Image (cartoon, rainbow over all chains, first blue to last red; front, side, top):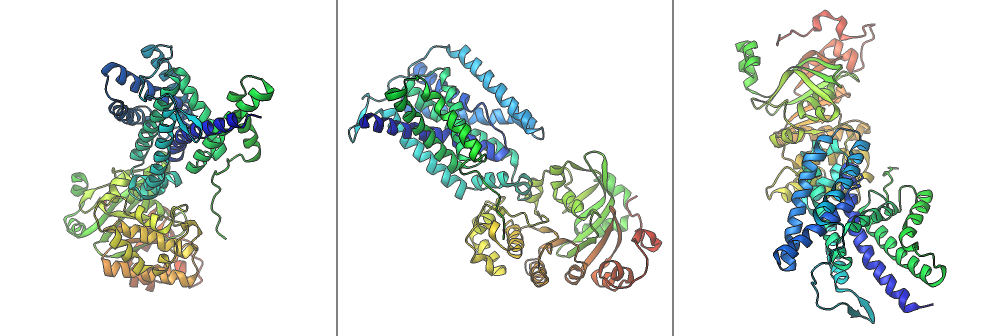
Length: 297
Length: 279
């Protein structure tokens, strides 16, 4: 048993897990507001990472400026996507809308490959050191940054849903669209806002992952990995997405450890989350935190 | 607007000028085929408490939804006639635009957001407002409904009466000019029904909020209201002051639980065919 390696992997898992959690929250945000399962979530990461990479390499801007421009772009992108593609679909069966998101996913993949090529492009170096030493463990600075940003985003989401006007409106829309409309909430605005936030925050995760692994179409696979996380947590629970993300992140890395030490299968890392997904769906179909209706007694 | 005005007689035009809300011979169709309202007209003067009575399925809730625009969320459509609020046609506006103009519907079955707290529900009521008075208004709501102040848990765990109070309180937070109340007495104990109606009456009197109240509980509604309309299968069949309606033998028989004759419907009584004012 190599405890140091295990510990290192668990820490890595937690950090990656927070990223899963953040992307999972974006996923849940859209699902809660409009019951749409967004299969193009992974492409949001991809687009965000490519746009940020492009801005940084083309214009040689400082990182934070490029990053902010990327977020701005993604906000506009999210709103336009909702207004132009998904708004006309309001009133259509949800399954049609989900099909559209699958189409969007393929479309964006292709567009990105066409525009930026199929090879992995490294991000311009942002941090000087390759890794920092925390309590004897090696952590990449990009991951450290991602951890801090993820925690800020999670706090931001908590605040947003609890105190902001739009956050309350989103929860009301998630509860019942007709009730929301009776309160003067424009559900079109709520939908547009949920897509914009989802696109922005996903892009942020895309940039972080891109900084570590380089930018390539493999990034959109991250969106698929988020599925087990959100389904584990319960599709309609924001907290569930975070917890699910952490569990999947740690599980992946522990699977890699077990694999590397004893089993030597070689790809347990990738498939372990999906095994868990199957088991969870058998035991708790609505996920760990999925809501059951409040019954008054 | 001009078309409708041209059709109306001058005398009635003058009458509508004082009305906050005029529903002008509306016809409502659901799913493009089902005709639910067959020419409903009613007037609600400013500051009045008007009630709309009738049996299940008469079209009372549909009338309210036609006014608040919520009909559009249920695949319903006003195919003829106008809803005029403060002199402007509002039937083509989206529900949220109608809320911003000051009409707030408290839907049937309370419909509070169950997974939110009382405070969050109240803040949601003030969604359309951007002024600073929201905190003060919340205190004002608590003076009318003191028991809501003690409830800190999720609104889904409140009792039925408390949920109804929260639904009305939430409506107050929007500072509406006019409130549409859909069966506030539904599922409440007789004692609570009295309490809720007392509060509705007070809100109407103290705050000057114009009310249109849909009820099954005709006795309580007529006690609280100034004026009443009675609906039957998508039409208004009788109207009058609350006193007139309470004294009416047929109303007593059908809605207030008196009499015992074999008459089944107002439709059979020629005297209650409402004059067709808008044709």
